[in-house]
Image (cartoon, rainbow over all chains, first blue to last red; front, top):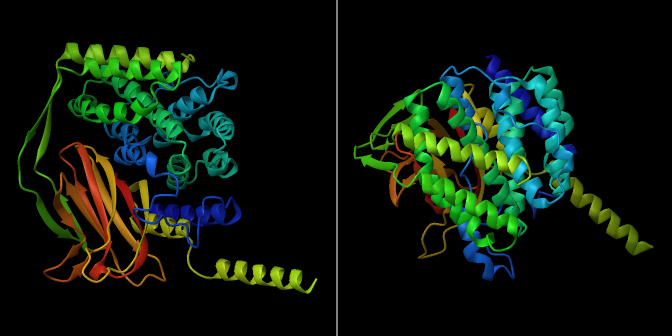
Length: 305
Length: 146
């Protein structure tokens, strides 16, 4: 019941936010993207766009945190990236990467309901988003109010994740795929850092497998960054660092066990239990190396490298 | 002066029609997230608008790729826009093979959502289409089941 009320509040909140707020996201009559349409003059960029579409959901700012919470791993502020110094970020490259990194931290704070402490982080995120001209997708005042009141976690999670989705969508639709790629890379590297740090202190098979499975995602992450790697020294450096992480995964094995899915109907819902399985083979040494490189890359990025 | 008045009047009429008319996609997304249930956390939404199937052509489909992770439970919900003629259907594909659809062609039953207990991390494709190839608009919402 409480959840329903929370969700209802989320709806009202979001409706108010989008009714009163910016309307630039609405295109045409309803704002629905038309399937398979290519804006005039964009045909030559189709391959890049297609690549971006392939990997548009690489990293979620909340999934890793939710997994840690389900493992009953205690919250630790030590994992978070400090917000001091964010004002000194000058390039769009730095701002975009850090927007992703802070987005993952916001997901971590929100999942653990440490929302009262996230106001400072929200302010930093808002400044970075404004700097990248995507601040219109973050309703800072509502997010701040929800964070401080701690009353409606569902609304806060919805609004914050939805804001990041909208920023990503806007960037990709406005020929700023390079910025979107950096933000996604930031979300991913912070999620990877959190997961590997927690794995070192709270060994858990599921978390360990999740880290190993990033091998599958890393290939797409590199593909996402590849078109921009020669555009500047920053991109080139980031690409090399991601390649370094990818190399650490070289001997991690992912195998698949076949199985037929099971489908049932429960309370009017269709439920599918997948019995085909992905299996990870990763040694302790491999995990240690992956964790070390991931930490190095993340720390280099947050120090402005 | 007369023209200016006419243009302003037309603009106001248009704005009021937009304001009071069809549900905006954001509102529809919110409604769909609410319908997904208490025990869920929103992850992603897809806004779908497709034309009616042209004679002799394949049913229009909106495809979206999404990484799904092992040991996670996902809920894929679909919601139709109020003015939509067609009913939105979602199907989950893995490497070109349909795993499940929210519409059972055999029984003619359409489900508002699919719960998917993922055991294999990988890139899946979500196919959104409208039942019987009708024209329609709606949203698909993906949530994580807590």
